[in-house]
Image (cartoon, rainbow over all chains, first blue to last red; front, side, top):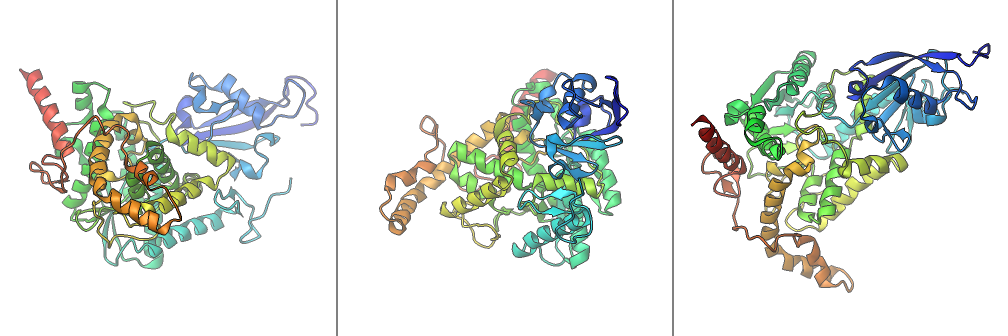
Length: 111
Length: 402
């Protein structure tokens, strides 16, 4: 998205929630998200920005601590970037690309 | 950046970073390695014998669904000759168990396994909804926990099955080790680490084939194999998964992923120091401990961790008090054995683990393991915990009806 010079430029991605996290997001597993292409400081959008965006714009449930603790993804929630463990992709620093699929799956809930 | 390649096949893109050794694996290598490790646990512990009928305690959640899937795969691949059955407990909680039971029903079709559902209502004459209606939400987990421990055994007996496998994973075991460590309860700690609980005296034994499997890998296995599972929290204890040892374990894992298996291993090592419970890592039944470890000791059977929350403390505490008493006899021996083998250890220090924090104020009648006079279920007291709780409930119901 090199032509994205306006402030309104966004990156289209899909975000999935499972393992019980969907209940924080309208009980819906898949969401199409238009993520701002850059953070307020002008840096390319990373997972950090995505998490902030999800908390501010997508999550209506007040229990944000079930998703984020101390400004980081709650331990016990796995993040898969295009099906790969985010630990292989740079974790929070991963720069989000158009049409990425980001899956958040909780290991914290029971059956 | 260029995709990382699988360290195993060196051709496919790595999708998984294993918590236990940081190995980067592709999807199919990961699935194979995961299954091979469970197979190793099963064979090295000699968990099953050919032709054995085994009930899988199935909640519809990730752990039991993965357990059912892996056991089916391994049973066919390695010719275990097992007859596998799904056994589900219906606590009778509307809006909670309904959806997960539907998942189990689908699993039964997917895995071609017979399914048996036993309900608290048929076993005890009470659903959890009715219990909560009578006693309120506070303390209801105690009832549910006590009822569940027996329910799996009774369900297995109805099916003529003597072995129930549960989906407890390494994180669950580490969590229990930590909690028992924090309580200073070494005897429970020792039992919680053994892969098989229940011995020759109990009619139904329990085992945990996923004891060394990381929860993270269980979830990834379910994800990559596209298994059909259901995640939920009990409506009566929405706070259940917060706080506690679980949060600590997950934070430790973040910093040092090997910590989970290290805690399990430490628990096993400590268990060897505890008298009367000679079970170790890969040991199974065979030796009869001085104080037998009935199935009711199993770590909370509840997938949503309810059974590990303070709601269950009362029952656990009561049990602990009885066990502390039982261990008093053995204390002298420990101290002696330790001081003999150790250099110049202070004998008194060895007494500490067995000093129940609040046992001083209460006295509990010394009991040996027998059977409940009412229901016949194994119990160290005349009347088992479930029957005691039922008595209270039934009195209440009588009052309400009048």
